[in-house]
Length: 216
Image 1: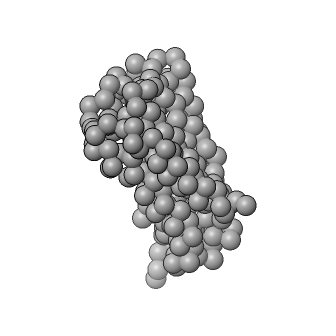
Image 2: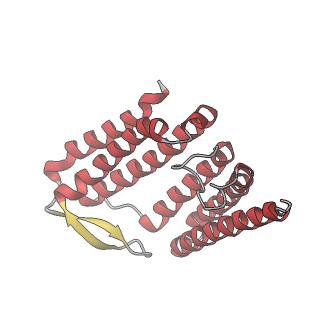
Image 3: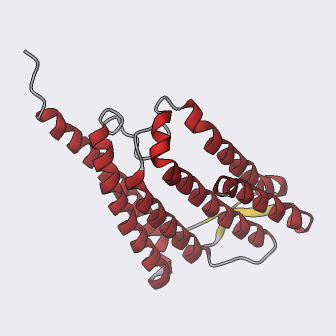
C-alpha cells in the first residue's frame, strides 16, 4: 500500500482543484509577505493546477530515481526513508495548495502562523529520517564532501538530522509564541542550518584527509 501514497496525494490535489475551480476568481493570491498579507497573485489556472502537476512529477521521481541513480543499489538500504521524505514533502505541498485554494475562495488562514508551523513540522520529520539515508546522487545532504566519502556522508546526515529537528522545534515554537516573528525565525533557522551542515561536512572531510598517509 505504501507505494500508492504519493499517487493518492496527487489525486487529492487534483480533486481539490477540480472541486473549487469554477468558484475561483480570475486571479488568486499565491504569495504572502512576512506579515501574512498577500503580495503576489496568479491566474486561476496556474494557481489551481501548478501544484498538482508538480506533485505528479514528484510521484514519477519516486519511481524513476532508484532506477537511474548510479548508486541505485543503496536504495534497498534506505528505501523506506527515501519514500517517507518524498511523501512528507508532498503532504506539505498538498497542505499549502489547499490553503491557496481557500485563500482564492476568500477563506484565508493566518499564513504568518500556519506556514512556519508546517515548515517546522516538515523539518522535524525530515531530520528524523536523514540519519537513515545512504549515499546517492539525488536525495539528502549532497555536498562535494559527502559525495566523496561514505563516512562523511553518514556523519553529516546524523549531524544534519539533529540540526533539522532542533531548528524545526524552534520554528514551531515561534509559530505559536511569536507569529509576528515566525517568518524571520524560519529564514534564519534554514540559513544557519544549511551553513552548519556545509561547514560540518567540509570539516569532517578535512579530518578524514588528514588521517590518510601521504603518498610516497
